[in-house]
Amino acid sequence: MSVTIHVEYSNCDIDMANTYSQIHIQLVFAVKFRRGVILKSWRQDLFKYMTGIVQSRGHKLLCINGVEDHVHLLIGLRPTQAVSMLVQEIKRGSATWINDNRLVAGKFSWQEGFGVFSYSPRALDNVIQYIQNQEEHHHKRTFIDEFAAMLKEFNIEFDSRYTFKDLEE
Image (cartoon, rainbow, N blue to C red; front, top):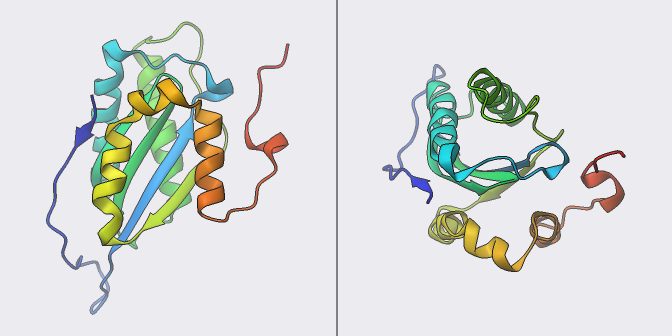
């Protein structure tokens, strides 16, 4: 089950006069070593916590969902914060919440890095539908395959040797 928040799109008013924006991004990031530890029993609470982080920074969370080893967030981004800083806050805050609540054995961490993809307003319904159907997608395709396909779709060059860290044995 995903969390979807419907919002009206309008120009945002930030501290700078005559600044208008409409920036829609999808963030994608994985659990360290892609371990499948985000359990259904607390996943929605995690999504609510992440939503709070996004909204407390003045952004609009349009949709959030994920499966055991990764999450997708569709955000209406205000131009007052760098994407990398927002992701750092989401990851740090949510990892602390998971660890403080002892929801996993050992210490929880997110994988280094993230994917960020931008969309036009016309594409949002399709992106929301895609994010909402994560469990269905991952019956057919692994996260690594999904992420590689997204990078290729957006013509983002990558070296698969460095995209994800494997558990060192």
